[in-house]
Structures are given as structure tokens and as C-alpha cells.
Image 1 (cartoon, one colour):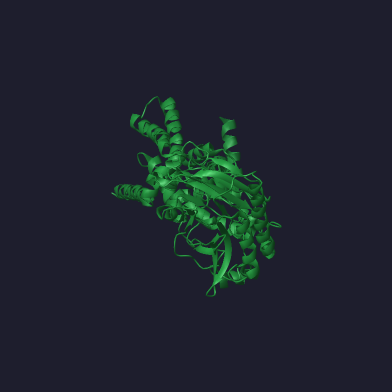
Image 2 (image 1 turned 90 degrees about the vertical axis):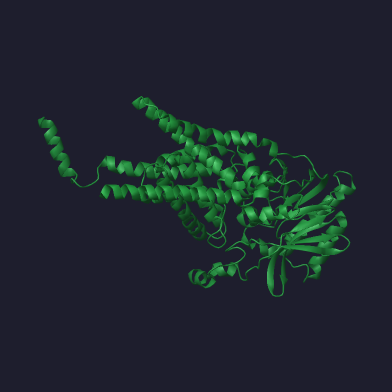
Length: 535
């Protein structure tokens, strides 16, 4: 007894009575570390890795971190989860411009995840909380895809599932339903483990809660299996032979634009090389050719030399080419796809509608210029937006154009399909991001889009990775990075619409309403509890 009393007395002298002890600090630090590490685990589940299944334990740990906590704690823990996820995922945004813009983007985007964390903590006390919590996550993604500056959907959970068993759900309800299924399974995994541990410790079984947890775990998997018939690579409107050209660039980095004529020449040269192989009988003649975004940053409408280069390439291959150009019209710049006929020249255009903030236009120009004039110099003139969907008729096939950044947005891809596209092309330019993971992340988006709308997707890129993707999401051909190459393949044309195409934004609205209902229930329950306590 004496030893105990002395020990207590010495402990009190070393540690003030009101100061948090080691256990208190551990209770704070362990959840914080777990939140950040589970965010990192979620990042590891994304391409170029094929570890899609890691998203489930990532959300299971996130659920363990948040369940039963206050919304304020959820806010902080959600922010740490967001940092752990987005810092490595978006590191490519600072490859050429330095860490400032990258860190600023992550700091802002993680705020959305913080708010989601607060919402999940609030609904985690409700019966069937995994359902409400997963809906809150999708509501956060919906907000992040729209604001600020028209949103930034990069990092949607669906985009990490191109190799996963849940992928067929993209055809059911698009990226919101696919993402909801994955997050729901992750939270349900934690709930099932939690109830199993509780049962083993106390010997009591909460049958209703266990049934809900198992259903939340099983229903998404069963739903994905049931959705398999929606995924098909069968031709409905015949087939076409497509060529995707990757001309390469003289060098990576932002200054590749200073070699604009070289980039155009590279793509023309690769097309002429392909024409020679076709003439020699080594390769099947394509019905049309797809060039990437920025393959002609010299305006062919204003520069006869650029027009002559494209004309020569089109006549050599003898079929229409979709050319990615930068065009000035009425004093406005457009990121444009130009349909170039070998006999008639340019006959149709598509102007990119979802333009990239800080890349193609500069919001808050005066404010940013006051911070760093070099950033404003990178975007000297803002691009203007197109207003109409782009569907080119190429040798009888209707090809929907989704230019690079647009592939991340649900509405841009769907609009091309509802406008009659039988296949999709995603012309892109990744040269400004060197050999980062950006091109693989974007390629995974295109694979998800292929299944979502049951369309062949071609991805012609300036410097890699270009690819041919079947309507079932499988890559059948791809190039290396920073090489000149061409892909030629016979691909199916399809015109039927998946449930996801027909429903459009409705599944996302439904999940946002579920999230709102759960948050309203949680707030109401909390208010009633406080009133009862006051009484």
C-alpha cells in the first residue's frame, strides 16, 4: 500500500492532475494516425496499381475511426483522411509548376472530405449507419464535382474500380452507384467485424444489427454479379477499324508548347508511316484516324503551313482524321477537335466544354497574379467554352468526342451518348505531367466510362498511354509512354443505352437525398436527446 501511495504521489508531481495522460494522448493520436493511413490505403487502391480491393479495408478503418464520435471530431479526422488520400493521388499536378498549386488544391479538396467525415460521424449512431454513411460520401463527391470552379471529380471512388468486381454497377447507375457500393461494403465490413467482436466479448447477439451489416456487405456484391449481363462487347451496329495516333512530343514539361510545329509534324509523320504500312499490306486500312488533344496547337485555319501538313497526312492515309487543335475565332481561343476530310479538308468541329481551371483558364487572375506572376504567364489568354456536344460522323460511324479533362465529368460523357455516339474518343495531352500516374488514372476513368455507357472508348494521347478499350472495360491495345506509335483495331459500334445512360443524374440525386435524410434524422435525434437532458 505504501509503494502504491508513493507511486501515485510521484506521478501527480510529474503530471498535473488536469493534464492529459499517456492514455489520453494515445486515444487522440491513434484515430488521427489511423485516419491518415486509411486515406493512404485508399490511394494505393487506385491505378496504376490493380489493388482495387484495398478500398474496402480503407473505408472499414475510416468507419472505425469515425463511428460514435462527435461531428467536430469527424471534421478533423475526415480532413486527415482526405490528406492521406489526396496528397499522393494528386501529386502529378505539381510535376511542372512546383508544390504550391498541388498543395493548395489538396488543402481545398480535403475540406470536402472533412465535411463528409463530420456527416459520417453524425449518422454513425443511427441504425443501419453504413447505408447513411456511404450516401454521405457520395454526396460529398457530388459537391466536389461541381464546386469550386465547376468542380474537380478526380479521385471519385468509382475511378479506382476499373479492375474490380463492382465495375458492372457503373452500367446500372454510373459512378455514383459504383462508388456507393464500394464505400457501403467498406463500412459494412467494419460493422460486421465490430458486431462479431462484441458478440464474442459479451455473449449477446444483436440479430437485427448483424443482419443489416451482412446485407450491406452482400447486396453490392450480389448486385454487381446480377449486373454482369449489362456488360457486353458485342457489336450492335457493325464494326469499324479505328487508328489512334500517338505522335509523341520533343520533350516533356510545360515548354512542350514551344515546340508546337514539331508536335504537329510528329503526328503527321506517324500517320504517314501508318499509311505506308497499310499500303504495304502490313496493317489493315482504318476507316478513320484519331489524333490527340493539342496535336496541332498551330491554328490550321489561320496558318496555311499547318493546314498543308494536316492535308498531306489525311491524303496519305486516305480517310477522315479527328485533329486536336488550338483555334482562335472572333478573338476567342478554343480547345477544338476538327474533323478533317482527305478531300474536303475541315468539315466539322467540337469545342471543349468543360475547360480546366488554372490550365485552360485562370480564375481569380488578379489575385493569383499578385501571389505569383509566373502562374498568370502560364495562362496568358483564357480559353472559351463550347456549348454543343461533339459527335463526328466518320465513315458512317458516330464518334463522341470527350476531350481529356472532360472524361472526369459524368455529364460530358453521357451527353455524347445521348446525342447518338456509337463509340467514344477521349483525345488527351499528358505531356505536361511527365511520367506521373496521371495518365493511368485518366485511363481508368475511360475504362469505367466504357462500361457505364457500353461503348468502345479510344484514348489517343500525345505522349502516353494511348489505348483501345472495349465496351466491357478491357484494354485490348496500349502504347508505352513518350514513344511514337499507332494503334489499329476493329472495334464494335453500339447504340443501346444502359440504365446509367438513361437515368443520368437521377441515381446521384437519390443518394444525395438519402444522405440528407440520414443527416436530418441524426440532427433531430441529437436535438431531442439534448432537450430530454435539459428536462
